[in-house]
Amino acid sequence: MRQGLGWGLRGAGRIAEMNSAVDASSRFEPLPVRFVLVETSHPGNIGASARAMKTMALDRLCLVKPASFPSAEASARATGAADLLHQATVCDSLAEAIAGCGYVIGASARRRSLSWPLVTPRECGSRVVSEAGSGDVAVVFGPEQSGLSNDDLKLCNMLVQIPTNPDFSSLNLAMAVQVIGYEIMVARGGEDRLQNRRETPLATADEMQKFFDHLERVLVGAGFLDPANPRHLMLRLRRLFARAEPDGNEIAILRGILSAVAPGSGRDHDDRPTDVETT
Ligand code: SAH
Image 1 (cartoon, rainbow, N blue to C red):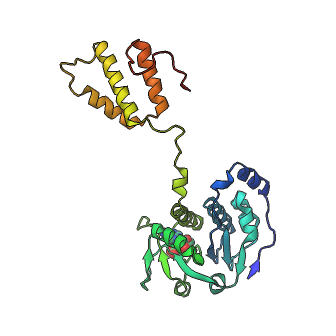
Image 2: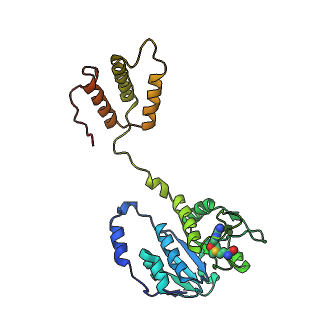
Image 3: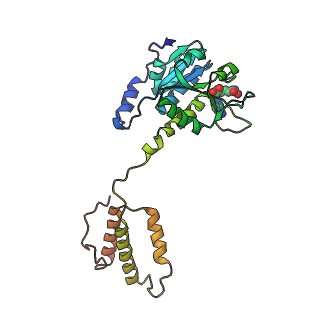
């Protein structure tokens, strides 16, 4: 196995810049998952695959007999992921590339005559992440023209197929890398990390009840709500505010507005101008 020796470090400065904007606690731990590209003919696809991997927090790239590597085109297409090209290993055979891996999964655009266990990208993502907990894992991608050979498939535990238009099933190599990498990211909890944390907790049930009581008094006082014939007005308004999921601060603002337009309507609420943040 040959180790890459420092090609195309263009963009390393930009990487440092991008990383500095990231909170260290939100980084992903390195995952022992290598992406193996077999006999890639277009160096641009190698660069684009490196970029796709890095966006998905994967950093082990292995190339089996690439037609042209290192290559200026690969470096150009990698943009900020030149470090993955720099660290990539280059092998003479798939067997060599997957040495030490307990679990090997091959990405295939086509159903094969030889029936091989097939998983979806989603299943592949969770399987790869769980297997990576106990050993090295490889995901293998075939050459652009022919895909993985039957000899390559024999070395895989399973195949993964990205669902596509049945009349046009072959993705660009780097795009297949992106999809599989994305599913690994999802399986690692990448989506959960995106969930916005609330700055202020949701208004509590009793805060909401007091708000609705306040609103009702103002609407009755204004002649908009007839207590003798309320119909479903308050219920509809409850539904509207439930959808908005207001926080405690927002409810305090709304109550401040009600008190401002109908002085004295607050009762349990301080009718003086509030010091809640309105921005
Ligand atoms: N012409 C080839 C496809 C080559 S695309 C064929 O028909 O098999 C290059 C590589 O990208 C494929 O070998 C495979 O590893 C991956 N790939 C492309 N489309 C894919 C798909 N729909 N599902 C899984 N892998 C895919």
